[in-house]
Image 1: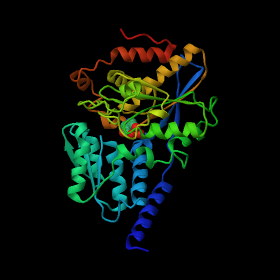
Image 2: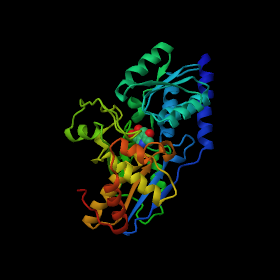
Image 3: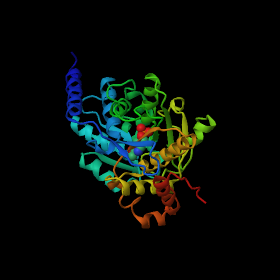
Image 4: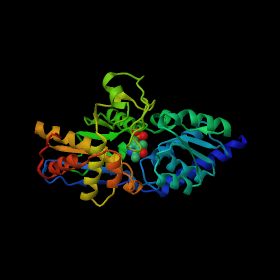
Length: 358
Ligand SMILES: *Cc1c(COP(=O)(O)O)cnc(C)c1O
């Protein structure tokens, strides 16, 4: 036994014990008064200890890096993040007694920065989203640390066949519903890891369920998918924290995706707010993106005359966005007019009628 084996065993044991103390997340149903034949469900990932779906990813990334021998006792862990992953990784780094540095764009919400610092992590801010990769490599080199690189490893660090992953959990929780096998699962993409896990699981289990990925503005996932290209890049950063990337991330696996929808940012924020009014939850922006795409899947099912279910994700809580997406002045100052989308969504919920935005 080498001296590092002891630390590794202890670290893996701590991660397992933490998992053992944690509960699974809820799947709740949202009433659609005007559409009685179709049910819409949300997998509520805001109830993890670090409040987002990145809790699952961070745990997987630490296990992967430790088992690979990339992270050992005392390793400084460095990550490129738009915020949520860094919050979850800071939590696990503290659990394991490892120093942690998050490299993030300047616009990252102060609430997320505070959460990272709460768990003892340090934040290194850069001007825009495209710079986080290079800056993370440099910080890792300077500190002799390990760049975790969620955008490369998300798709492979998570066990897509099962082992309590998000897809397996959804299907177990759907088991007693009127339509236990959903027609669609709708997600959005940051790393693309959640889409990869769900898409592969659907194929492995031979479910007829199709996977739809929603993409916000200022992101290349949609254009890359439609054009079948991997070299498209942009300079701007996504306005919807957690999703939308300036390059096609290695963890985004187009082959597991059945359909993509581009969602205007104003529609995401409108959907987020309509949801906040109709359930006892305050969702974040990417949940609005998911909902707006899920409603279009439901609209199409209705037009085909099919009954069934659709599952999407509540990715993180809205408390992190009170000063931005939930603040009317912020919306106006940033040029988002959500009113037309709000009426469209409310109308659809209540009557099943989808009005075109003029
Ligand atoms: C990361 C993230 C997503 C997308 O998940 P991926 O698995 O990285 O594609 C959606 N919403 C929020 C809030 C996120 O942080």
